Image (tube, rainbow, N blue to C red; front, side):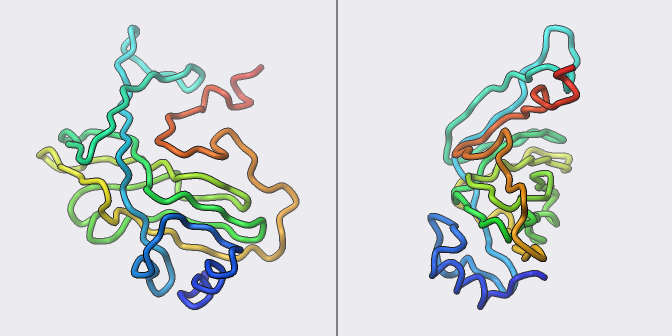
Length: 179
């Protein structure tokens, strides 16, 4: 079940759920708006001209109050907020409708597992025929929180646990690549 604004406020107040820093007006009827941070990563070109999921991707890091995403360009970014989910809550990261209608697609693989702690790395894609300027501090996406039917047996302890900044792909660490 998706949590209401009332339940979200209660869980934030009693410390069960952590979203920090956060302003009260970020709580929406059934979600919490998250803001764009100042850290951006763009994949560097490879010597072979191709990326492989079994190899580490190198990124160029930019720390700035604004960033221009090229036409049909891709960038990783982070949220200002660091979240902490207990072992009985999960969350979905969704783009805000107004942002998507502007041609900026936002994703984070869409899912945050119970037990996750950290900032959210966002994958941003500019679908427009012109570059797009994005500004740190702007509400960029929303966190929709839902209850699991029980406390999970195996809370998230994966390769992105504890990330506090924009984090590039770690697909090269996947079990498929360890054989």
